[in-house]
Each structure stands twice: as structure tokens, then as C-alpha cells.
Length: 213
Image 1 (spheres, rainbow, N blue to C red):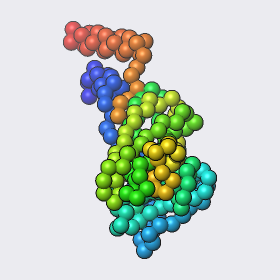
Image 2: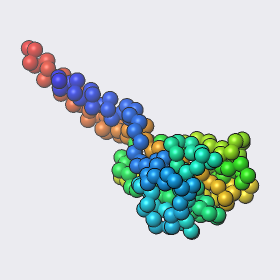
Image 3: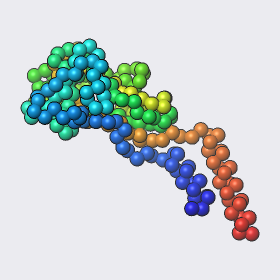
């Protein structure tokens, strides 16, 4: 490849949109399979759900039942466990590039008799962002949420916790499923970096002109 084309390709790679691939492991909680069970409880600190650690006060529940269908696949996590708030999951660490934009998406569910649900989401030890699914219809009501995060660290762990929120949350069924985390925009270079790239292009152009002469 001509050096000039290579440098142009590098600039486009730095400033372009990233290809979307899920960086999280087991975002639909299909591993381990609990086929044959309606649900299994995991105590705080458990790593039984591949790629995740159970957190909070009490147990997190992995659910698999036709009566309460998953949003993605066959299994989903109930962040209330048997009953209660302040239980959840935190992902294994994912490598990130400071300044790049990442998109978190997930399905938040609630169950007809219990009503609306609210989940708290954190990136590392950053501030909590609350997401609410106001119950609409159906036995299991799933709603997809998304949030863009500009990386401020070289790795991230993402936590989900079922929380109280008045009438907008219940303590019997806060569903989580289909969690995705994707790079959607790479870091934008500082003006000084652009200047260096342009200088490099000028140098490559001068060398090409000399060869033609």
C-alpha cells in the first residue's frame, strides 16, 4: 500500500465509527443453563453466572420458565431475588479506550402482578443512573434501554442493582436480560494530533514528488 494511503486509512480509523460487537460475556445469562429448573438463587459474591458476580444484600435469582419468558434467549435475571431491593450483578472487567464512546443496552422487565421496575446502573465507581420500566401489558413486560458512556478509564465493570423508587419500582420482580456493551465511536484526536498527521501527509507528499522528479 502507498504510504499516503496508509496514513489516510489511519486517520479514518481514528475518527470513524467503530464496528459494534458485544464486549460483555454472557449478556443474556444463558450460562450456566438451568434447564429443568424455574429459578436458582445465587448469594452475593457468587461467580456462578458466567461473566458476572452477584452483589448486594441477599441473593440474585436466575430465572427460566415459559410462564415468565426471557427477552433474549431462555434465561433472565431477577434483581429482587426472592424478595427485596439492593441486589444485582456486576460484570467482569472489560478493556476500554479512554475518550471512546461505548453504548450500553439492556432489557428491563416487570411482571404483571407486581408492577413497574427500576434499576440502578454504574460504570466502575461512577454515579448511578436510574432506568425505569413502567408496566404496560403482558405477563412479562420487557422494555429495552440504552445509554452512551465516554470511557474515562482503561477498563470498566458495569453494575446493575434493583432499587426502590416509590411506585416506579417493586421488590418482587425486576428483570434484566439481553445486556450489550459496544464501542460506537473511537476517541477523537486532539488538535495537536491532527497537526502531526497533516505534517506527516505533507512529508509523504514531498517524498512522492521527489521520486517522480
